[in-house]
Image 1 (spheres, helix red, strand yellow):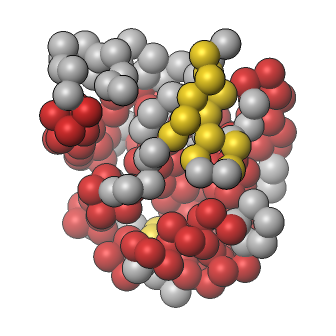
Image 2: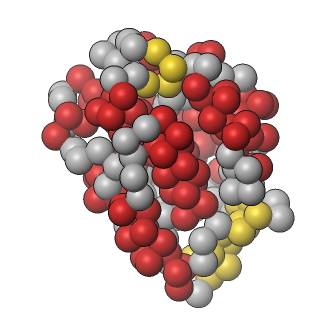
Amino acid sequence: MTLENKLGLNNPADLAREEERISKKKAMELFENGILDKLEAGKFSSLKSIHKYLFEDIYDFAGKIRTVNISNGNFRFAPVMYLEAALENIDKMKQSSFDEIIEKYVEMNIAHPFREGNGRSTRIWLDLILKKEIGQVIDWSKVDKEDYLMAMERSPVKDIELKFILKNALTHKVDSREVYMKGIDHSYYYEGYTTFKTEEL
């Protein structure tokens, strides 16, 4: 199934390639134009702004909360009927330490507020919080793909593994464009991971 898109593409592989190309270009603009610096770290409103900017040229739903239930394998993300309440609670979560920030990141991943593009948007959102609160960001080139994906899958039950992996990848290079863009690399981090099932409501 190919998501309805503004590009008129019907082939999933073609859409994935264009989505990655366009969202990377837009992510670079976010960084270079200082747009991220104007967003409030840790708020869902900021994540919405990031998602809208990355995907507004591709999807009509860019920056909009999803209206379908989605699952990945046996894991079901937050049901639509509880999604807004979950996002309000995430907004209120503490974020003054590394552990608190990762716990907030895990909850946002469980919420998975958008139909597509959650991973890239939320990694930018995570680094925004880390930069503001502890003066560091994740150097994603130091994060093993398989270890990260497995830790993310287990994080709703136990997040200690994810915290360990990400803590070991922290860097003070908060203004490095190269470090920032590693977190946008869709093909590296989410290849084979976005096999979501949806239920139309």
